[in-house]
Length: 294
Image (cartoon, rainbow, N blue to C red; front, side, top):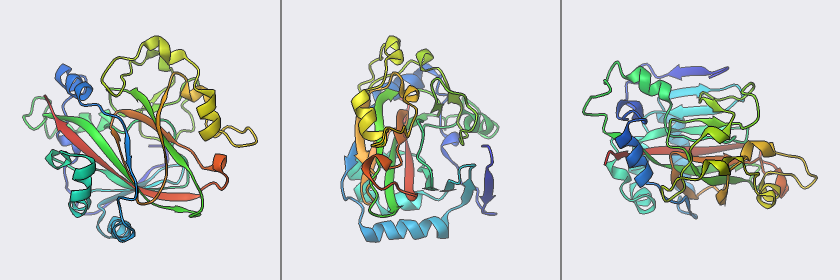
């Protein structure tokens, strides 16, 4: 990642998703991901203030790996199974079967910047590097990325309002950033960047192929105006970046809510300027769960 700094706890040796994932281009992996897609969901006021405070403290007390990127976002990862255990009943209510995942991956993140369009399945680079420990045909490699959870922990100023938009498009592939019609320069991400949406085969929440001709359609003017444009007409996200996409659900970034979505689902956030007071800093927890190969 451009401008990345990484600090790792000297005793950290925890496995991650790259130790369990099948090659995502394997036909069985593709079939499993496609048959287990579902709509994004928001569970309102599920995580109490006390539970959010516990998670906040856990990140700095028990996290195993800290990194930050060029835009100032801080990521804290490792040891997240303890967070799942702490919230097990709530998570299983929102995502039945999460307990079957062999690993709870993800990270805490503190960011001053809205998130651009991306997916959060798994970096192919991590998978390839991990083949030295677990070869492609190893019996442990019998899982695929399934569903992710985001728990907003806090935002400042607290009176600000912002959103996260989940789109109908799912990309059954490794994690990517999508910047249609624009250059890759200046994007603070360790994910490969796709600059031409017309070449991507997307699927909807039922696993149905979305015609690739739709990838060139202009984005909804009404939705863009409501969530990605300031009242004075300034663009928070270049409209061309959302070419071919359709909004599925747009949820407020509200501390205490719990969001569930497909790991291969495209999503993006805004900075809240379209609603009045922009946020300047926010923190959340991303948890990632795997599904066994069908």
